[in-house]
Amino acid sequence: MTRDSSPSIKVARVIARLNIGGPAIQAISLSKELSSQGFECRLLTGVVEPDEGDLTSEAFQEGIKIFIIPSLSREISFIKDIRAFWGLLGELRKWRPDILHTHTAKAGTLGRLAGLLARIPVRVHTFHGHVFYGYFGPFKTQVFLLVERILACFTDALVVLSKSQMRELVDTYHIAPENKFQIVPLGFDFASFPPPKSAKENKRIAWDLTPEHYICGFIGRLEPIKNPFLFVEAFQQLVSQRRNKSKDPQCPLQPIAAVIVGGGSLQEALRACLAEPVSPAPIKMVGWQNDLSEIYSALDVVVLTSLNEGTPVALIEAMVSGTPIVATNVGGICDLMVGEKQFVNDDEGRQFIVYENGILVGPQDIEGIVGALNFLLLNQEQGRQMGRIGRAFALKNFSLDRLVDDVHQLYRRELDRKGLLQC
Image (spheres, rainbow, N blue to C red):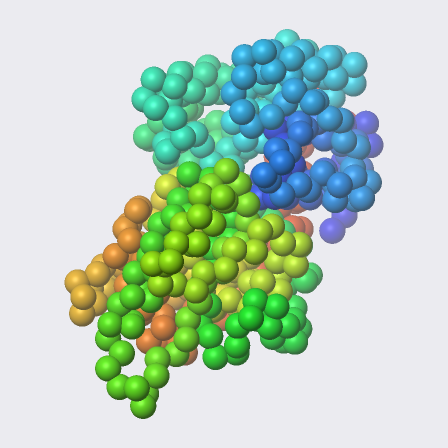
């Protein structure tokens, strides 16, 4: 698609760190693609923590102009945050970009304050999620709400990933009026999805699992907000219940297993939990992986147990891989579901909601997750149909070209509104 942006339009993108996850993937993709379309882009970022997967080297390999602010990080530290602020302010004053686009809470706060003092003409912020639930206590949460409401007054456009996320920020948290928000769904390069069938088989062999195993996967950061222990507990409960119901040795049950992909602050605690002799479930922890398309294709279902989300990349990648999803109904996840919802109460009294591409359960509802996984185990052809529908939905709605076009138009609109658009 031909775009008519001027080479003189400079965009500074700020993100706290390029750890594996949706925000970093979007920041890298936009910096690369918009640079190839005539924008001059720079990416200002901090340092990734040792327990996180790091995409910084991949960003360098893509030829993106990256400027590291060493004091910019995920942790809240008054001294480091002050240093990061001055570092950002110095870079913005030297380069004088036309547009400042910040991603995630920490970078959004420090970046927009620096952009305001540097008098950057257009300031844009993307809410990939929010920190108003599940992260901090009541007092800190109220402070962050106040800061976001003030910063919104000095932000030209607030980008959200879904309609549900916008409604939450407008109606529940009162961040800004609706006309300040722009819905821009995520977008990805799906060229490697799905991989060849042999890759799926090879991955299962590497995990010491067979083609007969039904494999449940958790993919993401091992942090409290992602609630990975809920996945472990639900899977262990499912295994125990199936063993108790297995009466006929002549008709053995299909073997099941679970795989946890990712790392984070809870990694060692999870390993210790799974090392306990009483643990009944075959759960493998494989850390961060680069071949995610192969991993998704080797799974029979992807489970997300988060307490809070924007639009989780793991679910979109699962769908484009043709894998059904089970997720807690938080944040913008409901916007990823296809078709009419069907409320189900199974024989054990467990409740969940079945859609055409997957199943939603209540937040922290371990019984609901167990019921949903058991439902898919008993209805595997329906699960495969869910995967086919989810793939079609993801390919249609979350392409990289669509994301780049949306952001391109957003930039043009804001520049034009301020009389800065060059023809």
